[in-house]
Length: 339
Image (tube, rainbow, N blue to C red; front, side, top):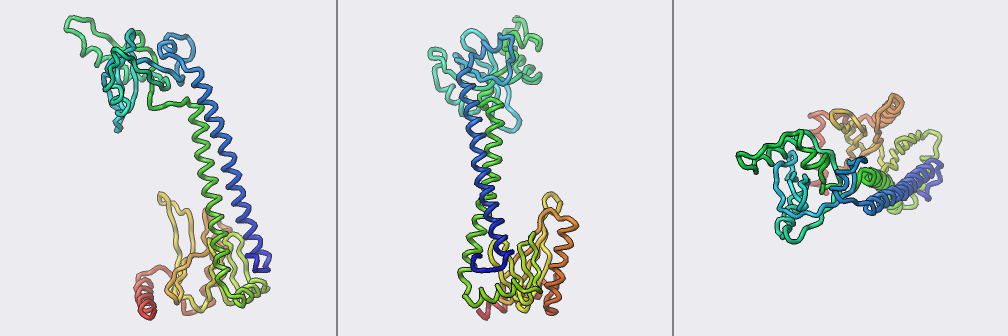
């Protein structure tokens, strides 16, 4: 882009460089949240408490990092929704507890002699729902003799505690929130940085392939007073060419255009982007003027681009119709056969 003297082409480059730097900055900011997440996890690890101590405590019981020395074979009594993760009744040799774990964790415990060698597990405490309490009580009652006194839901907290140990979740809510923010910002920053980096590389590579005479011709047309520049679309409409800096440099001579049509992308039925597709006499389709979040102002700009192009060549087929599709499919076959 440095080979062009037009001020707007330089602004396009600077804009993409700015977006690249913003993306890199966001990635840097995201690591602050990663550090904060790790610090919150480490702080919680230092304060990890025996599950029974949390249950008998008068303080807040939920979302606490806890451990439990299991000294029994886990007894499964409920499966969580459509997953294989399940709720189990376990014991530390003195009291009963409810633990939520994965099949892999269960297999590890099942293979060990927990009666003689207790196994320490870790997780985060969660408040037991009424449904889980009901299922746990029913499971426990099934193990009793016919004459034994059956438990009711009102007995649950006394026998199992008000919270259970979630072994699937190994970090507290605070740590997970900061970790989620890290992933969100890092992903957004990476996409932002890489997309603009690839666009800059693509544009530079496209320009490098042009001959000096062609670059001078395009530069002269871009600097002409008759040329219209659309900043939002990174697009020039000159006397003879469409010059687009969208993703890479695209130079299209109006007389080479065979077909033009509207292309829309929709998400859940809502139009999210709109662009113009152009088929040229070399059989290639180019995309220009991609516009996101259509507003009245952008639609006006879009219509200006569309009308300017179709008025430059009265031989252009217009619109995505069956007749045009059939005609252009045949035309592309002829072009490929010639090549």
